[in-house]
Image 1 (spheres, rainbow, N blue to C red):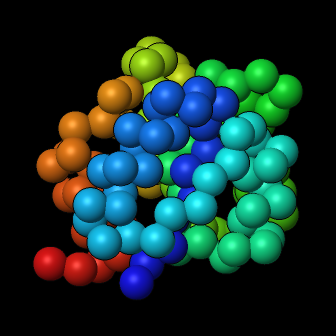
Image 2: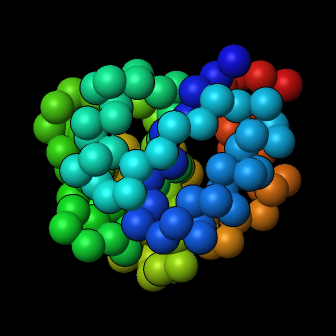
Length: 120
């Protein structure tokens, strides 16, 4: 079973995302901000990460930068309400594999996850 780390400061959004991911048969661990997310990456070794951009303390862009600086190659799906092209490009330059709008569409998220995990 693949493990996913959900990093989002909104408990409400995490709950919605976790429900979708668990319905796909994935093991889910959670973090409430970027700093906690970085710790969880080291502890849990997830197969991929669902990352919010707009968070206090350490936002998603900074989290992507830290992951890159640490040499972490875990695939990242950015989930955000911020749909600016500049932000999308910045995230992709930092290694994000996908960029989806919040709230995520379950089918679209499932398609991206299958691509990342290499499953049909």
